Image 1 (tube, rainbow, N blue to C red):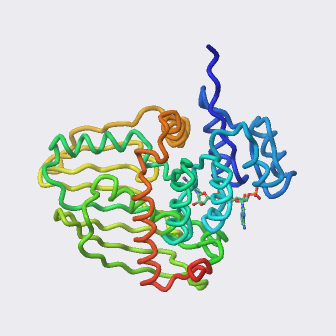
Image 2 (tube, rainbow, N blue to C red):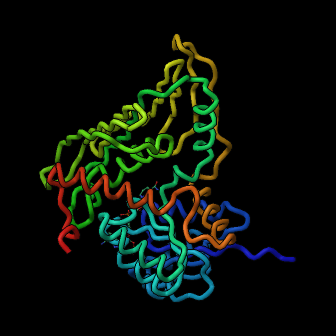
Length: 329
Ligand SMILES: NC(=O)c1ccc[n+]([C@@H]2O[C@H](COP(=O)([O-])OP(=O)(O)OC[C@H]3O[C@@H](n4cnc5c(N)ncnc54)[C@H](OP(=O)(O)O)[C@@H]3O)[C@@H](O)[C@H]2O)c1
């Protein structure tokens, strides 16, 4: 029997939409089937460049295409809400880029709507779906580094004056763009309750957090220090330090190598992840498999976790005075 490809419709034609197209083009049983843009010219140019059969001059037209199995939403975070709601109301399964929404209120509303309509929805936080997650979990549970006590993670890119980072109406700042990875790095290995939080940030003159530091104490006695910056080049490394050694994960935004060190900080081994297309393939495959199983959320990134991290980020922004217009609605 001929295998039908899993057809993905890509919404938007920016940086991440290109990565999605490259990834889907590299997967044997998935297809970049359609692209939707705010302008038909951009959609057509994108479709031609990436060999995509259908091009739509609006997001609504793409959502209405009955042959699409999954709508992938690659607009700025500020613009996830409206298009995601429209897709859910049309009954279309969605994979929505991180940060999932502007805030927890939008997140809860969208997730509630998806539950009510029984429509699959997932957050495209790609690191959650990657093989490194199981590799690191297995290393921790093997006891090789003893009992974990301290987790550190940094993610920093020098992004200049990118509107997506600098503007409140585009949900700017380092936290929603980059800090979300650092928080997920902690939560996907150490999901214990947070018993204490400290944080601070340095803001742009537009009022967005450009560099931030967050310190979390977990109920199992682990301390996690994470930081993110949209204005400098970070080491982007995560460290899980235990009583008998440590794991160094390079990097927390698409791990490639896990280094194991002993009690005396002596090198034991480097473990590499399997060959990738881009690293984004795992999130598309997870959606395909979850849909085939009839699930409404992916096991790798449960809805409760998406909402919890949005709630944490709301709390940090409130403390720092980083405000988006959508917070008042
Ligand atoms: N997972 C990852 O590794 C990763 C990496 C980078 C970004 N992201 C996420 O992906 C999303 C988009 O980021 P990006 O870097 O691709 O952004 P980008 O290059 O600025 O592209 C965003 C696209 O969204 C569409 N759009 C709709 N309304 C818009 C508006 N008001 N202003 C600007 N663009 C608008 C545009 O496409 P049309 O004009 O064709 O409609 C635009 O090309 C963000 O949520 C970001 O956090 C994820």
